Length: 139
Image 1 (cartoon, rainbow, N blue to C red):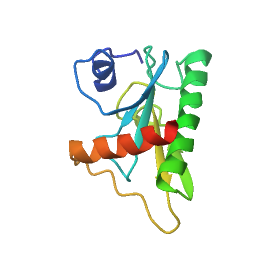
Image 2 (cartoon, rainbow, N blue to C red):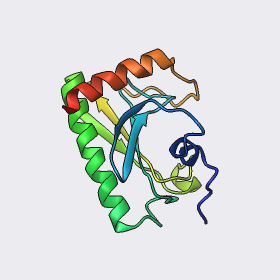
Image 3 (cartoon, rainbow, N blue to C red):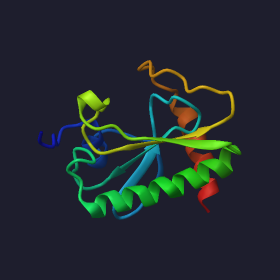
């Protein structure tokens, strides 16, 4: 399978679609999931094209996991979380929906299940508040 440069994350990277940024460096972008499964649900993507973990370069994978760890640590602090769930899907049969490599990072609490993925978008002001909370914990 080839990389589709018109996927939603590629459009976000080009500035054609908005996102609620949490963190950015030379190689990665972290932003709020618009259909969150919990408060603080953040996505991490490489800036360079990669369909998924199967075709990403070792450099892309390294950069992404470094940012995943940074966001996970900030979420633990920001939300006083008991744990973190990290998900990454590859190809349709593996559950991938957007075909640009991405990691879901979600703060978790004992006895609190993740909300189902319903496709319902969150309010932008709510996402901004969560992004601000995580950003504050990054410093």
